[in-house]
Image: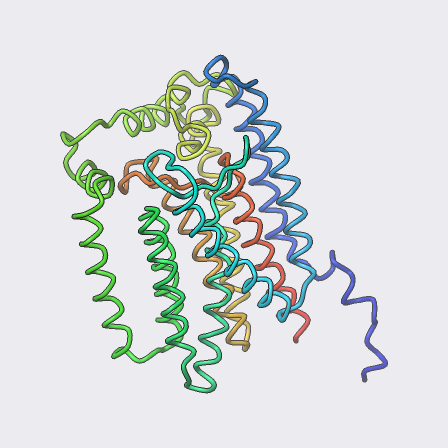
Length: 368
């Protein structure tokens, strides 16, 4: 039976890769490049550096991202776990360095800067922690040992760092995805209830002690609190774009948004490409999510199921937060749109997520 197995099969990357997820990711990259090319016109003369630098750097992020996706998708489950552990530990160390040794930027200590290069190490906690959490949950289900409490300790460490930075939005994102992982693992409710109550307590403490958190929430529910310039312009952009948009580079409203290249890039898409393409992009994200969900439900491997669903959730939740913020459905949060917004750290993090997803799907396919 073993002699009938083609030894080259495991090395044929194209035959083992999930093509629907890969092609969908490439489509998102394409929309990102189109949007960033339009950003060049919007930022003309606003910065001391050449405006085409943003597009050039974004293209570099695309290349690096594709290399990461290709490389990670070729590894095994064992390699994925070791890589996640390495990224997780390194990210924790770099987050501490960002908090204590690097200057504050925009009211937060999230970035490490060297000359003209900067990155946000907390972005890499997302994929690495989800994979490690799946490992610890799998061990706990089998051995019923200390693994779950080690999982909680990792979450407390991450949460503490994110609140210290502060990055309340990412704290909410990671906790929500982690909680879904826990609930889907059928952990005893006696353990889950104290965790949820602790989260509510932390949420309230952050609301009353972190001014920017309180401001954004109050500003969302009470429009007379603070300045609604960005969200008003964002909504006007969608209205101005209509169904088919004004054309690439022809937007007149979105270009006035200070964060149009990152947090509000979906508003630019809505104005210049129109509602049709905005819905198409949402459809691509949904396609990736449901493809992962369908495959994960076929697996009998607890680790693969838990890791896949966790990675899919953290990917789609980021999409939901970004788009919902642009549409004033939730309070504004500085979170990028995966593979479309400008931002190297977020782009690489999203590439790691997709790389791990393709790896897990490949291993599930080969395990049958």
